[in-house]
Image (cartoon, rainbow, N blue to C red; front, side):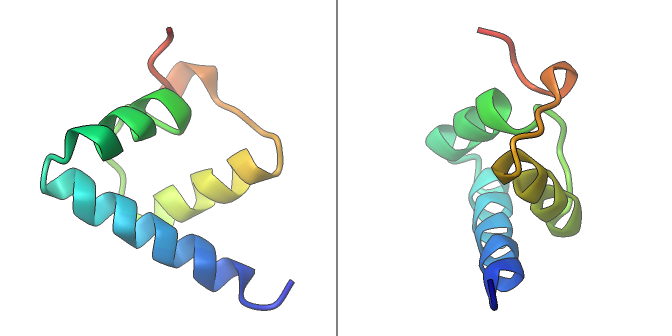
Length: 64
């Protein structure tokens, strides 16, 4: 799908920017769904793409 990588990168940038502002909703979503580690945009884009492909890393997420 053309542009999908760009969309993931833009979403990753948005999430990183909001997390840097300590926006609670974004930080909580990241912690519960992707990773509890602070990552850069490229790493987050990779993790988001992996999540979209059905891969998960339970060790990196906050367990509920």
